[in-house]
Length: 121
Image (cartoon, rainbow, N blue to C red; front, side, top):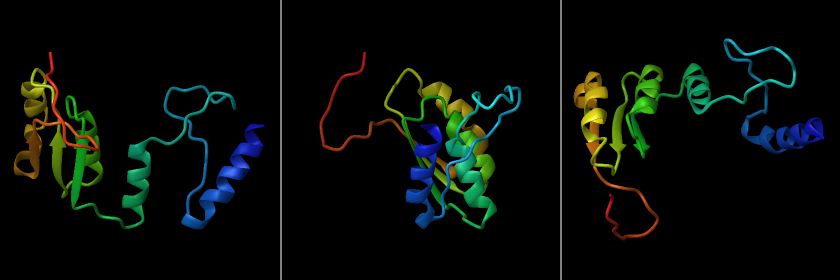
């Protein structure tokens, strides 16, 4: 069943140059049933390795900024728009992204598909 799904997925992805593969991460068992799909960071690193250069990156729902810091390692010249609505996490977010200096713009807002408002606890 899995091989059939994988074959179907690969047939659908082939026209755009993508492929479903298995990746063994450090510390994981190499048993065939214990595998991990590539992460978003893996895919971005692959794009960078074939010449893609991101200039502006948006992290919507940034929380502490961990993803922004990981992606900054892949695209060290990119500017970041970091969006996080939680006022309680803002000091932690600002502190963690200090190394990015002027390349980061932190916005305390939320992202939605329509204009609305809500109160956070």
